[in-house]
Amino acid sequence: MLEGAKKEGYQKGVEYVISKILKNKPDMLLDDIAQMVEVDVSLVQKVKVESKRRSVYYFED
Image (cartoon, rainbow, N blue to C red):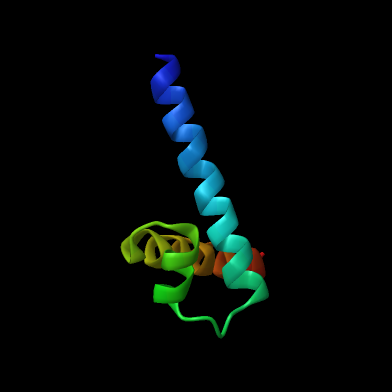
């Protein structure tokens, strides 16, 4: 049980770091971000898509 919580916490932390990089360095290539954070590029793409969805909802209010 604790192992699952650690894994989920690590995942959330990595996603947070990726989202901050995308926000602060929007011109940085996704491959470069993935290499820097040491994750698969598909995770970086997922975070980018989710962050765009959140920003669209944010501006619609």
